Image (cartoon, rainbow, N blue to C red; front, side, top):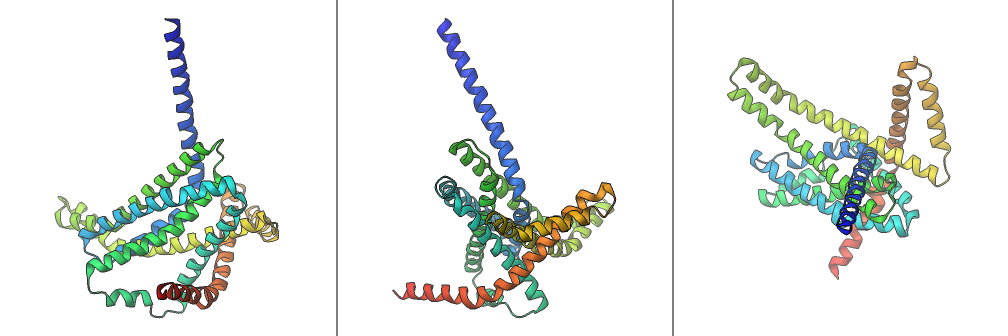
Length: 323
């Protein structure tokens, strides 16, 4: 009997440890996920464009396919690589973060460049040349999953840098929770966004009260504005997150003068206002300066990416296909 009681006591102890571990994983995932907020905003703002132009009945299936690809990117492809880097080559994490941050800066700067200097997009021309909706859907889904891979890599790397786990399994569990949680949050939000105009149309036609029908019409009219606001927010998030990652990476690598200046300037601006606004103004000032740096760095990268890197990749791809 005493042996049975001892066994039950051990089981209870293991259960307590397991529960504590779950709590630790959730807490660590929450902290790590918060660090990726800017990239999540960008991901949620970018994705709706991949379902534009398709029949309403295909919108949710397309989002589901992209979400599945995103889970595959994060859990099957990126999580093992992140764990290998963390345990065998931690020195690579900062350069990889900076590379991903530079990509975000490039993407954000390119969007602004196209607004300032509008010209025809080869992507749009290629889409218009495709007459088969099924083929176009396949192409859009593949393109979305490729874009998601870049953003997912950034999310997982940021989360990895933020995780303080005592062992490999805790680290893996935390990254898995972050990856799944972020994917559900992003693509759940995207699904709501792209179907909101359909909800508004349904209410406008079928609501029982004039207020309900008016609300539906308001939703339909508001969604184009919401999509534009999301695009602006997504671009700003790209530049802010990308710029802050590059600046922080420079600090880690021993080039901290820019980060220190931005910190000092934001501190001075924050303390120039009344006390209750100090934290908000200081944060906004720093985020703005990080974003301005991100825009400047992205503008520098545009000619490098379009004139050097892209032709080189096309040449390599052409050579590989030739063989």
